[in-house]
Length: 269
Image (spheres, one colour):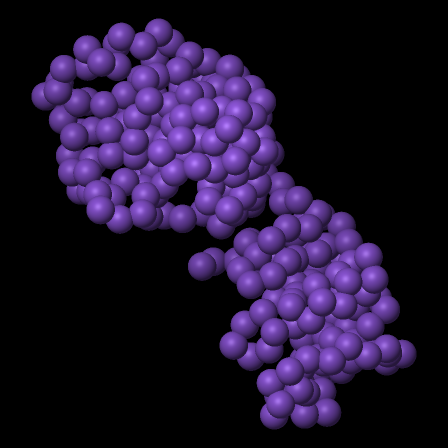
């Protein structure tokens, strides 16, 4: 079922156009219970079509299990839920992306990670990582939904980012910034330079330390400093080298290259 059909079905259900006999067959469930269940199987492998909390489960089976409803897909869960606004999301609600014939997904809302609502904490069963609790960028393509007879007994937590976290193309570290998850330095791979790959190849934090600068153009290279090394991307050769350093970087115009930046997750998309 595509997104338009899903929204129409949910609206009709709320208006009384669709009998809610299925939804009413499920007893009420508390958000605290659902979240405890969600956390209890962290690390379970992801398996498309799977419905086994030990050996493999997919995203919609995971949501169905913690909501204590019969096993649903992203295209049928509308019969057990209704659409809510983004501002209404509370822990235990779900963000759903249903598309027939295309990859779809759903994830459990656990709280906002930033006051600007650009990032969110979720529980989800996801490809390549399995069942996980993590912070990700909020995706407005997902439809917020709430289970019928859902007891909202978990308050909205205070927003907060982990001290370091994945970002597009790499990782963000605030250990050498404000230690708040918000202000620090990101090391990433992008079209300009693949510094995160060099960082991982060189041993990451354990060997090179945390980043202490943003990337800048320096001696016809793109460089970024860590506590114990300089990551240098040789632009003309399209390759990286790792060197020692005893310098501080300066950006033309007097901008301090060592001034912490805001996490990409806190910035508008």
